[in-house]
Length: 221
Image (cartoon, rainbow, N blue to C red; front, side):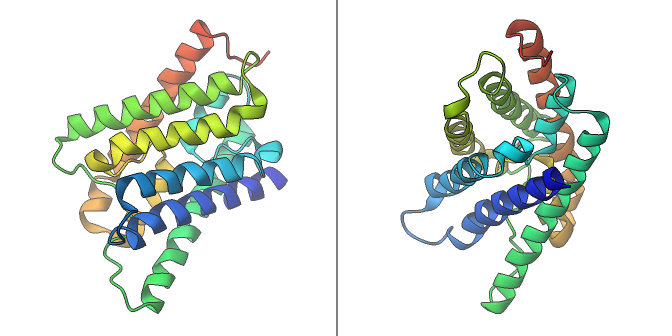
C-alpha cells in the first residue's frame, strides 16, 4: 500500500507540474521548451529523493515493466505500480483541468501528445528511442554498479535532455501514464493516437531492459 501511494503521488506530481507548465507556461516569456523540459526533470528529481526510498520512484509504466524484466519487481507489484501510476496521472490531469476552468481558460490543451508533423512510424521511432535511452539510464544508474546517491539527479537531467529533443516532435511521452490521462480528457485526435504513446514507450523500455540485462548486468539477483 505504501508503494502504491508513493507511485500515485509521484506520478501526480510529474504529470501536474510537467503538463501544467506546458499548458500554462507556453505563453510566458522565458519558459518555452527548456522550461517545460526542466519542469518534467525537476519533478523526477524531487520525487526520486522523497518517494524513491519507498517505491523506487518509477512513476512510469515503461520503467516498471523494465524493472519487472530485470527481476526487480514481482508480477503483483507490477500491476499495483501501473494502476497507481495511471490513477495518479488521471487525478493530476483532472486537477489541471480544474485549474483551467477556475481561471476561465480553454481546456482543449492539457499537454496531450500527438504525432505532430511526423508519420505514425516516425512518431513511434521517436518515442521508442527516447524511452530506450531514458530507461537504460535508469536501470544502469540504479543497478548494482550504479551510483545510488546521484541516481535521482542523473535520471532527472536525462529526462530534461529527452524533452529538449522530444517536445518539438511529439510533445514527449516516454511514459504511457503521462499520455493516457490528457488523452482521456481531451478526446478526439489525442485519443485516436494514444495507442502509439502506450506501445512505443513500452517497446523502448523492454529493449532497454534486455540491453541493460545482458550488456550491463543490471538484473537483480
